Image 1: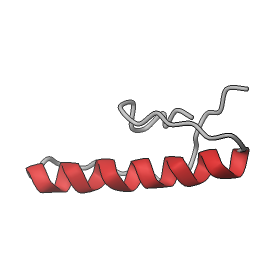
Image 2: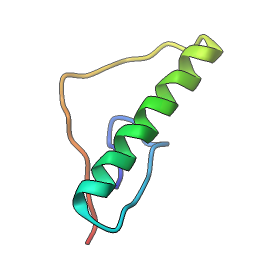
Image 3: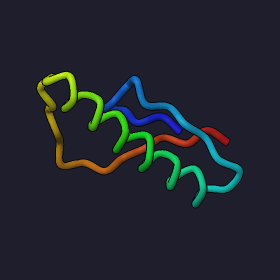
Image 4: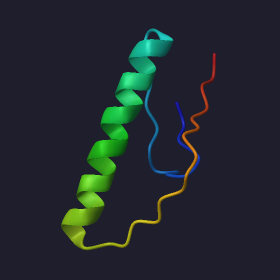
Length: 53
């Protein structure tokens, strides 16, 4: 899965549900790392991910 708003976040899973759970975890970790470095986070109102079959 690719998260368009966070191009550095890419993950995968064996099922759609697993891929979405992995994407959520990757997003949370990415945002935590950004906060830890003091980097500004620009959030959008969309909740879109792209899955390749």
